[in-house]
Image (tube, rainbow, N blue to C red):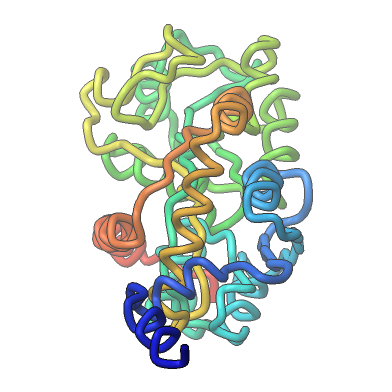
Length: 322
């Protein structure tokens, strides 16, 4: 009988350890750190995806908002966390691409301390103006900025934010001068644009949709490869002759470096499945997010391309936050 039992056990297929890791994860709650305050686009993205991920995985996914330090507070905390997959971070291009050159010293190293899981969504940037400036279109805006001594003032969601650097990219490509007025978030900046206190800003659709649709601000052009389906009448900068003016807040998921590849693969599979859930995709699109969901390798390659582009611009313009 013992011989038969041993023979039966030996006949069972031998699974690699990675298969068991994928099957076992997660066995407890996952902490999802969002380095922004509750209520913003990154927070909405995490909570929308996290709710479905939790349901599908059968374990709690707990969103933990840790704003501060231009996302460095949350990023450094996750970088020091156990590399077991149970602490993940929402990381945008500010966290992974801009901060390393904006700051002389940083409390984390995005390439050494964090490992990519997937790009979750894109927030394309849109040039908007308020009632304090009379322009017909984006070409007129650029012409007026060139003609005006010192150009216009412009607001942003904060120094070093994608909104800030998107406008710096336009300045560089169009050869115009403008003065930056950083705010603590897109909402207060947009409120001042709508109120006429500041002429213009770059804003993502998630933050600006209600203002644009309500006529409080006017959308002039989108910094995207194609027109946005939510704003079909607003041209791209490429259509206006500025093909290099493409900018978006890119929000992905990363984990502490050293997390086992099998665990990263399991998280990627589950999070991408949640992103591709029809109800989740609809919520994200309605909010103004372009859902993505790609592989760790694809996300890593994108970060390399983005770093080459934006870090050169930041260095060339000598932008620093120290």
